Image (cartoon, rainbow, N blue to C red):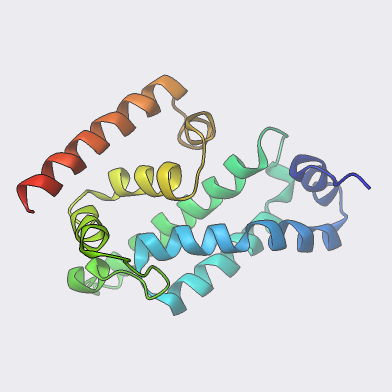
Length: 175
């Protein structure tokens, strides 16, 4: 039996077959959660944010016009994350920079080099960190990231190259 593509399932959801969203949730909730956890570092917050991503996917199902589902759902996740940070800023709550620097418990460093790499990643700005997490840790293609960000695959590849170069420089300077 052939499995339906994410895009076919989402088109059916957009046309009212909401029960099919459960299949997309099963396929993507861990990836979305892990992306958000890498960006925020707080499990409880990430659980809420992940749930909100799928709530918004259902709420705005009519905005899905085809194209890669992974790009569409991660665009929702990125917007949700931006809304979260903006809300934190508006509530005048300080985001604990030290807490953001801690690796989530689910990411166990097998050795000191990996632990050091995670510490260095925290020194990147949010957009740089997001790019590295999406491409290197989540395996999202440059093309899909370009679709999410309204850029070109070439531009995303150049940015990724520059971020990796910066990361390498910081890594070896602080070793």
